[in-house]
Image (tube, rainbow, N blue to C red):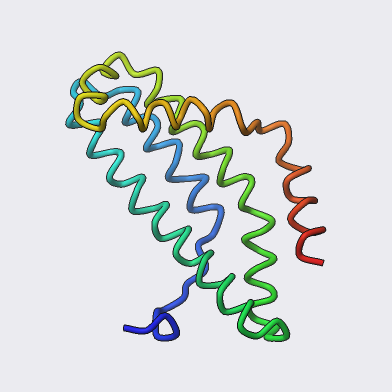
Length: 140
């Protein structure tokens, strides 16, 4: 299947706002590493769908920068991207703070936890508005 044939569907920020806290709660309430990994799989499916569609919107916009539909979709993802990153941080914090972290490190490896440590340091919800503004400036 060619990229041009991939179906595009806007992923609404409301979906992330609803699903992410539930996933985080499942992680925090888990009694086993397997329960956390099941929640992680749901998280990964959601983010895969989000980032796949955001990338499709970006690619299709890049191919035709006057296509009003993809101009709008690209702007949409630029506006919600920082909030999506902030929601992602809650997931990372839950994984990092889990009392089952040693078992998770055994299953996922320690590198992913080191990457998450860096990510937590590199983004703050306090700068979401600045990130949205930066995306608008870059788009112009």
